[in-house]
Length: 333
Image (tube, rainbow, N blue to C red; front, top):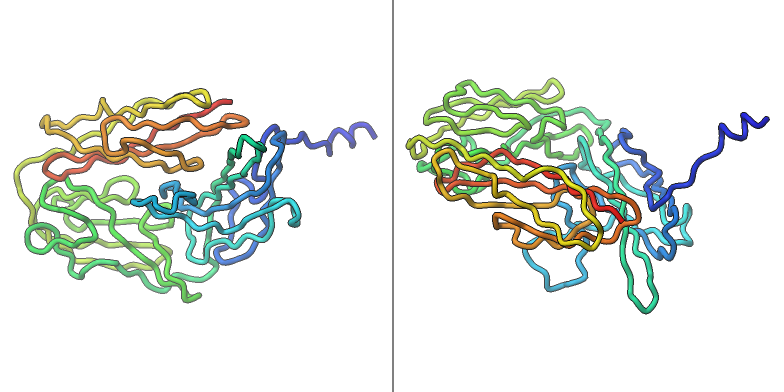
């Protein structure tokens, strides 16, 4: 009797937490599921807003300042309140065009009376899989693709240097009539270059210009293939790509000023570097000096340790990019 009672006892959460879907769950794109949260010991919650993001997308949520510019505001996909069933949850549509790892971010607004409000968050990473078959692969760029002086594509910004790293914009047409972005290996895509001395394939599905000439890029996903002819004609001055360094992961206290440092980033030729910081995990913080060597933000209030993740890429004067690097900042109460 006592063994049975203990076996079904569930320890309540210490703080606000998403309980459904669970971390690592596989969800079908376009279906409606039920979102649930456990409020834990957080009291005074008045509303919970839910957002979907690709795993590596920037964490951009609603902004109260309607004059804010320079960023895309993510739509709220569900607003949960106390009177809803379940409380602060409800029916949640999995993105129809979703595929691969996606993050569900839930931000709870807590009323503090005359002191205004504050927010806490939780997030889970799930796998989204379309039920429909992949019927065709296409490229959102010119065909054939010309990179460099002969007519570069605006999809890749300025390209006139060896060492340039870029992502090929690839989409898949599925039998359910939905087109989905499948540029990353996490969506099942693999790449091959017929001439690695022109373009080589890096980790994460990124491509790097190694030399001038022609190559054929072959993209494979779910047994379907597509090919893209590429002609590269860039400045052939030797140029090694820079190396980004975002520093070590660390833990800080809520309310403290956090400085992200790229000071250890370097360029093999000693060129000056351009910096680009972005946030890809955690509820949105105000990231200052995102294009400088050191960026900073104010660690928000949390009820229990929460992790914020940031990405850094650096570019040299000739246009060569580093591979992205990441740093996690865990904020404690």
